[in-house]
Image (cartoon, rainbow, N blue to C red):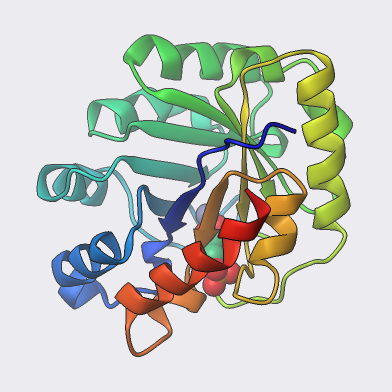
Length: 225
Ligand code: DX5
Ligand code: ZN
């Protein structure tokens, strides 16, 4: 693994105070956040409902942080391009939700954003084999998607290692993202295992100072980069 990796800290606004979203975003930016992670849920693919296109559009106009739209929706191919048009610079779709991944990932890229492919905790790393060349990043879920504040599933570390190995062996230009239950205790281990884009919700917005929380998470990665 190369020693000069860029680590992105991507706060998930799911745990933020939605009535003060603008302030919350400014705070995490001051703390060193480099991506804003937006969880889109449809109440069908996952048992929860969150935000959609209008919120992404408003956020994109309000911040210069790149927006990473994590689509936890069935048939994401029907909407992926619209999220790019709404201003998302990264859009990810789940392998479990899309029978036409190749088409959807290409559509995201053609629309001008980075395309991400996501696997749930019980979905094997091998399910990414054919899709990786069409993706800019691969997201390993370390909780079952749907809610913030869940406990990190430890077997995700080994999935990260195997995914990193697969990417390096094939010399692919795919970054690895991790999402779910990330905190000060485990962030070093996920970075050491190969993750480069680190999503965290409750460990940032569930604290008194989201700004300091981001700073602390980033500091905890330094020795592993
Ligand atoms: C879960 C979402 C996550 C979530 C992470 O379905 O995809 O992005 O907000 O929150 P924490 O960091 O609290 O697990
Ligand atoms: Zn997410």
